Amino acid sequence: MEETDNKDQMPAGKMDAGEGGERMPEARMDQDGGDAQMPAGRMSSDDPSTTMPAGRMEPDAPGGEAPEARAEAVETRGRQPRGKKKAERAGDEMPGGKMDTGETQGPPGTPGSSDDTPLPTKRTCSTMDVHRRLLSEVEGYAAARDRIENIALEFEQGVRAAARAGLVRIPVVVHVVWNTSAQNVSDAQIQSQITVLNRDFRKLNPDISQVPAVWTGLVADAQVEFFLATTDPAGNPTTGITRTNTSAASFIDDDRVKSSATGGANPWPSNRYLNMWVCQLGGGLLGYAQFPGGPAATDGVVITHTGFGTTGTAAAPFNLGRSATHEIGHWLNLNHIWGDDGTGCTGSDNVADTPNQGDHNFGCPSFPHVSCGNGPNGDMFMNYMDYVDDHCMVMFTAGQSTRMRACLDGPRASFLVEEQ
Image (cartoon, rainbow, N blue to C red):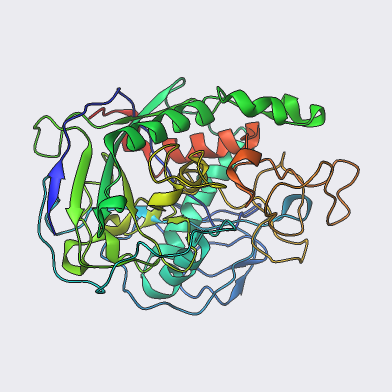
């Protein structure tokens, strides 16, 4: 495959991210990672299938590449504010291989053209599938997730404050991995996505007026902006865009798109750049992310090209750039708003100001949409971390903003000091 560095430069900005597993009350682990108490209802870092007593651990990001095999789902439970549940997170280590900075020819992937791939009709995100796979396959990932959750809890309780207040600007590199000319999205389509991110994370999106009056006081400016990188890892000028021609007709959530050895594009250092891969995803998948705490070689977000940006190949109902907003929320340690417990009403997203919710919402429900006895206001389905269509998701809450700031102060703190 061939990869090239585009010519258009973008504005400045950068940030860091991580996503947490289950939240944990009282007792905490010590930073050295020795035997410590775990929070009630939380599973052991070494064995995600065993429940532990009360307590939390500190963060370390394991390295190495995540295996391709998919592991069976593992559920972790922790602190559950108002009937909600938490998520886990991956780390910030860098791959041992080379980075792609130009246009390269890669190995053959799945043959054939994906021009006839059906467009997604419902939002699907594989972040939790990836999280569960990493729990089973990557040593140290569960412990890193626990430590990251300790940091998030300290921020939520006011025990810890941000090391740097104010705006965080995150440099982005977009790896376009294309099999057909339609998938080779334009610079304009990429820039349209950056514009959407900066509106959504700064509470500047015009459709914020859709938020019901009962929740307008909770809408938050996350104080995060994004810009296409202007300097590559070697210190050379760049447009922040690489292009790779692949033989793979499509990709799934096994991270093959993140390596030139498997038909994709290698990441740039994940402690300095937010890596975004844009490609053809199969099976109706819109995108996925890796929580903070996972392998550096696979850190970042992946978006299908028809759900990326607002122009070019972007197709309704996912043509307003919100798939990237949702996935970067995960990269910054946000969980799905319903807590990923199906319809159990017992899961938690570990954010106190989002209502308990029975399951994901599709399309665009009418307000109020009640589940889990959360009337009269019902689900906060217009939140970026639900599964509604792009035109229906319009907000982050103050609690979610605090959680993202905790991520930027913890596992993604490198974005507080560098701009590329």
